[in-house]
Amino acid sequence: TRVAVLISGSGTNLQALMEQVKKPSSSAEIVVVISNRPGVMGLKRASMAGIQTRVVDHKLYGSRAEFDGTIDKVLEEFGVELVCLAGFMRILTGPFVRKWSGEKQNLLKHDMLNIHPSLLPSFKGVNAQKQALQAGVRVTGCTVHFVAEEVDAGAIVVQEAVPILVTDTEDSLSERIREAEHRAFPAALELVGSGAVKLRDDGRIVWNQSV
Ligand code: GRF
Image 1 (tube, protein in one colour):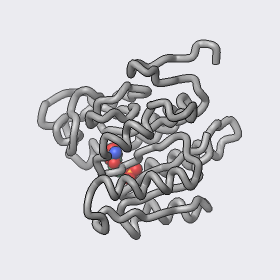
Image 2 (image 1 turned 180 degrees about the vertical axis):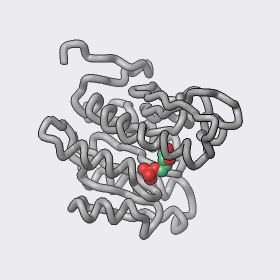
Image 3 (image 1 turned 90 degrees about the horizontal axis):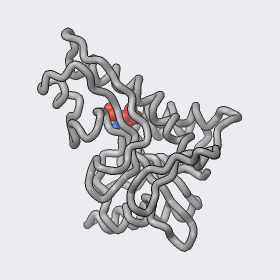
Image 4 (image 1 turned 90 degrees about the vertical axis):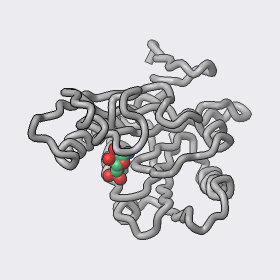
C-alpha cells in the first residue's frame, strides 16, 4: 500500500510510521511526506530516511479549497492509496475528505487515517490532553480513526488507554500519550494497509476475519 504522511511539526508519529514500514512484514510503503509548514523537524526526519517531501504552505493559498487542491495533486502524483494525518494541524474540506477517505473512486479505494490524543468521542478538538486533565478523568489515551467530514468523528480503528497521574502536567501527560500514539498509529497502518480492517460504505468498520 502506497502511503502519504501529512505533518505540521516535529513528526514523532511520522518517525514511528517510518520505522514500522521498514519491517519486512509491513504491507505499506511511505512514498511521500507533505507538510503545510516549511522547515519543520518532520521534513528532516523524512529526508534522512530517503523519503520524498513536499511543502504545501497553507499561508500561500487564498482558500482551503485551493490548498486542498494542491495536496490532492501531490497525492495523485505519487499514486497514494492511504493518507495518514500525523500531527497535521489543518481541517480538510468536505470534497477532499470524501475523495480520500473511504469513498469508492472508480474502484481505486482510498483511505485516510488520523491520530487524536484522547479516547474519542471524549475530548474532541484542540488541547485534548488539557481537556482530559481539566475534566479530572483518571484514564485518557489516543485514537486512530478513519477521517470523516465531521472533525474527530470517523470510525475508530485502534485506541490505547493511558493513565493520568496526580502529578501530571499537560506536558507530562502529552508525552505519555505520544508514546502510546507511536504504538497505536503503526498498528492501525498495518491493519488498514493489509486489508484486515476496511471501512464499509455505511461508515462501519469491517474486520476481515479471513486475514
Ligand atoms: C501529537 O501530540 C499528536 O497527538 C497530535 O499531533 C501532535 C504532534 O505529533 N496529533 P508529531 O510529533 O508531530 O507526530
